[in-house]
Amino acid sequence: MNPLAGLETLVPHCIFGAPAASCTTFRVGGPAWALCEVQTVGEFRALSTFAIERHCPVRIVGKGSNLLFGDDGFPGVLVTLGHDFQRITIGQEGLFTAGAGVSLAKLANTLARAGLGGFEFVAQIPGCVGGSVAVNAGAFGQDLHSRLLSVRALDLRGLEVELAAAALAGCYRTTALKGHQDLSLIEATFQAVPMDPEVVLKKQGEYGEYRRRTQPINQASAGCVFKNPGKGCSAGALIDKLGLKGLAVGDARVSDKHANFIVNLGKARARDIVDLIGTVRGRVYTETGILLEPELELVGVTLPA
Ligand code: EPU
Image: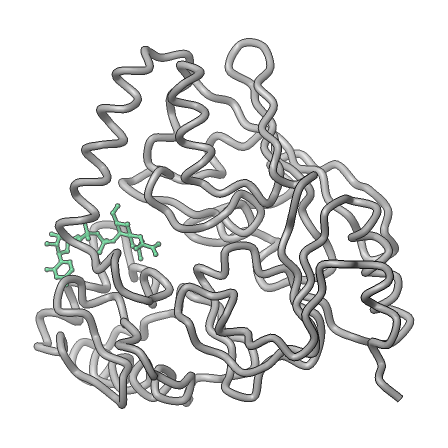
């Protein structure tokens, strides 16, 4: 019997057998049992209950910008967040709440128009609020956690919980939520700083220009592959120094623009990317003694030891 029979009546936006590649910025990954876009918290709750009864894994993919799925795909339901998760509510004195499905680009735009600063660094990050809070996304020496006040989430039983930012224990590119599927973020509340919209837009523009100049933003990738191994030590600079830009396995290639990016030239498979990550990591370890830790999340694939 099809374990997902009837799912489409609970979640109308549901594609059975959709490739994970279709919902990740790497454009890699085999078929999922289903890819669903939930429109309301109620729909999400119904999906979770359905999946638990059938022992079926569920994973929110957001914008899929920090994920690498295996070529065999995902044995479960992948979820993107629709209508009710796309709202931004601006409150008093710089407080605002953003749904987990809000893209960081839209967030940056809305805050600029509202004359709220402190989030210029997110403008070019290709993620959405939920995933970015879970991994504590950052850039230019800033991160989301330092401006986060609280989150609202659903637990596995479908009950809503509210957590203060401190409970997430955010630090460089991680929080207690990273890699855990037992809490699904609904929305997050942040503190911004009132600022002249022109100043906000100017800062966003400068950050954008830096990224366009130094990162392969027009090619399929999952952003930086590795965390920086220490303050002031760029994994990209380390990999570059070893002459590894341009190293390739199949259509997976270490970017010529920024060595901490692997780009998919078109037909890369997850296996190619994993092999390339393993080779780069091995070379860096042999030559420097530094074991780079992946920043991107691997699902259904593992790195060689
Ligand atoms: N560099 C090289 N060669 C390279 C890449 C970088 O020599 O191939 C040098 C640069 O010239 C610069 C230094 O390394 O002197 C730092 O480079 P960059 O400003 O690009 O910063 P990064 O530490 O490599 C981090 C984040 C990026 C973020 C940028 C900009 C991590 C792992 N990476 O990169 O975040 O966009 O700073 O703030 O923390 C991501 O999270 O996916 C990501 C790309």
